[in-house]
Length: 227
View (cartoon, rainbow, N blue to C red):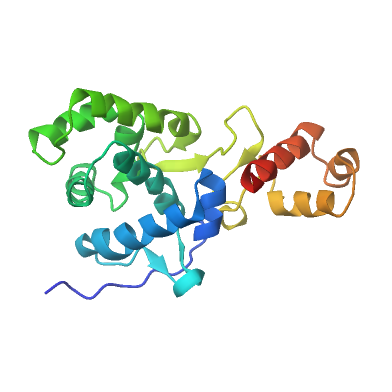
């Protein structure tokens, strides 16, 4: 019998994301994110840890920043045809290898997948061929370029949804991890609400003391989510 799990609660510095939040940040369909969270973090991965990955009920479900990043890896594994059981085994094995409950948010998988794949293949956990391995790398590469990893833990630390050459950042240490203008606690939602009310980008930039490029990034981010 598995030990009772401890339900995690929102914590400062870890971010708080609903399923629609995650879908908007990662530019994925809400239905897909909901499916992955329910299948893996609420049913499968939970069996190997002593705490829950999510909290809340039904559509009020929420989770932390590292789970947000792990969704990228799960989606990429599914895209190359890795089965549900194999993904679970890989998560369990990598948790031991990397000493973390969030191995799919670790730099060794996300930015150096080649060596990790070799170790998993040797353990017969992932039956993928070289073409699939390369496909996985191609799928996560665009996301990896948008992730900052901690030097000490090698876990994801920040995510730049439009890329690091833009000014919107998702950092669990700022505004509970909601997208903000880099270097501030001004949320994307705050800027967009002003624009949506009819204020000009120039006026909004002046009011919030940010440059016009930041306001334009907000418009690009919200336009992408509305598409």
